[in-house]
Length: 413
Image (cartoon, rainbow, N blue to C red; front, side, top):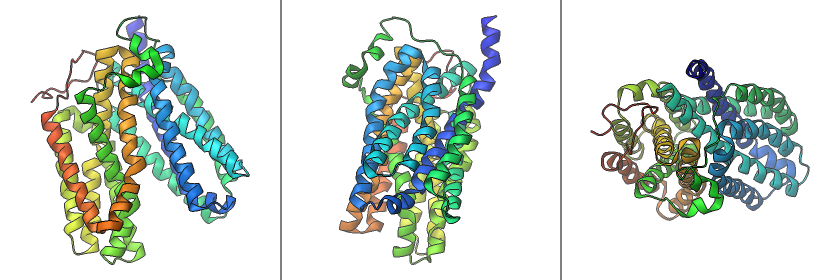
């Protein structure tokens, strides 16, 4: 009877967690796309804006370290249900804050809650994968990408018609808070971990930070950080490269990121079907080679249109890498340390490393570009992208598998 009940909850849970990813994408993009309005409304300097952005990332990384303990105690469903509806409410507060200090505090709170959601929603996606015995995490990340595009378009439209940030965020809160509450009801039932030796380390909160940093996890984290650094390079520097170096018009230069995002999102939406037929090892290997080829085309192309195509190929290469890595890390944690608690512990560590790429990557790229030029800076990404392909061939991706995890038939090849 319990098995029948569990089976009947898997399909709704899959769509519920996918919706959570999409909601998160809308909210993050909505915050980012209104940054110029924020700067103007509060009269912020570049230094003040940079400090807020840094604090957003730092608080997120800090809360990731305790998410494993919270998940061990309450289960991933409970954590996701609490933190997801809190995000649109905090976004509403950011839009309404009249002064820098209040806005900065709310931004820090938003970053902290988002860090918890980043870990817990990926942990829950892994839990659904294990229950369904099929891959879903690429689709979840695809939903995040679609949500970010929708959020960016809505934000740009709101700014174009002169809607205030407060009004824009109020509309989002009215729509997305109930959506988050409804989606949370259909998440897969997860139980708090029992008091076992395997689950105990996840309960120690901050002490978990100091242990368990295996070579395998460090390699996964380095691969994830490389992927997000390359994504940040495409988002922040593709237009600058095409305009300043390849002399494209401003309108044409903007198509570099459009091509990247469109290709990445499209492949993520079919990534689970691909992963059902191809092992994680092979998928990561060919993804790394594809991203390497795409970035090589970007830096060698003498024409803007070929550079745009190169960014598109890079997007294809990076599309499935991060979701596959999240799935590997989550499944290994669940198998080695016990269910949600083990998955959350491993995912929080992995996410800490990947966040490093997204937080400091753009700054490093800008600094290096100032020294050696943007072409050589993007060229330096190529060996790192190639390194992800090499790592996929050399590091142990499997660990100890269980029947509940989706099978990669040739994962050990």
